[in-house]
Image (cartoon, rainbow, N blue to C red; front, side, top):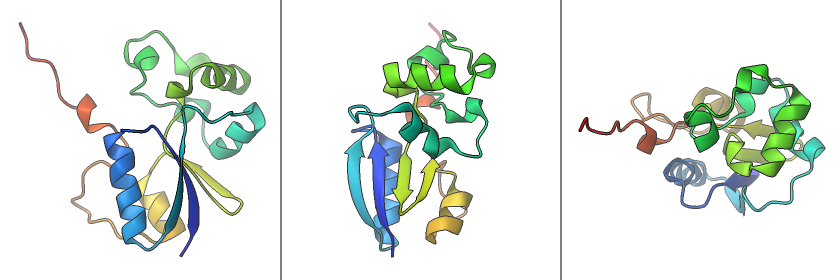
Length: 138
């Protein structure tokens, strides 16, 4: 099985479920705090290879959720600068095993890469379950 460096937001419900799935599949995790990691632009960008800039972002981040940031209009350089300044913007988790890196937890990609077995009826592995609850009208 793989040794995986798993960058998470501590306390994130989905990151906890993702780690449990990987551990249950027999993988060894080294867990790091995505928010306090001393990122460099080149190091961070390596996790996003093959993704459109808009797909680098955590859409649960307040700046995006509340419309303060338009991810569609950003260049890679601008996106990385914003993420270095505000790591909450980074799509998570970030995972690395050997030279392979991944941003987010697309269950199909994770299954192909790491051989996890997630039930088809399993909940959304990437989007925060807290975001699906809508406030009641007043």
